[in-house]
Image (spheres, rainbow, N blue to C red):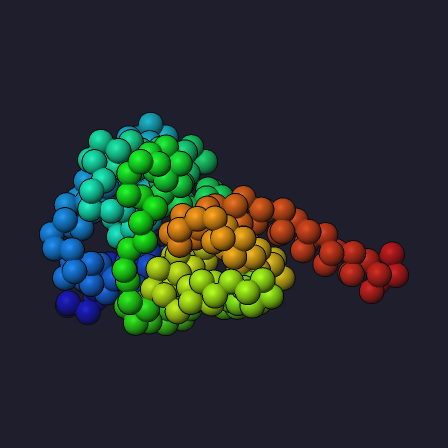
Length: 266
């Protein structure tokens, strides 16, 4: 009876596709709970409640359902937001990120930006005097289960991850930016890479464009890192790369169509 109920829960429309994401966030959340105390849970409760409230409101207005992608986004923001962040700023930033980054497009699957990316970028850009640009300490081993879960489930594509590493390490080596090489070994980098950049909705959709998307992210990260902190660099590099993802898809599709025309002599 219990296995049947678990199977039904895993295939329910509210949890389908988000279980690997939520499971991958458990270890980083536990680490932050150990190192920061209950403050991270309070942030998660606030951000999660606001996210859920907006999702319910839009679901009722449009007569459609919603999933747990908002809770996953809320968890990511709670992990990366500082302890000193005022509650009203978190509420405002979360509202902006969820509404503008997710719900105005019609919900999950139709958005081009990850709501957590939009939320963090909004907070960093709007409240420069606060500690949103301070890099949180997160060991890389806490992201190992997430990497396995997301790659195995298809929530993260290996081509995008490979492109990001090539762009980051390659340009970092060419421009002699040791911070770029060090970043590849941090938990923060892999958290952003796996959950924000590689999100299947907010990333490129073809194999070729996924590689280019990751490469663009890596290059932007090295360039931004020379003038900003690690977390602000990663967030804004993710945001800019996601904006160009549809263009990369269009380019890849156009090149593929041209090749087919030549192959068939048209």
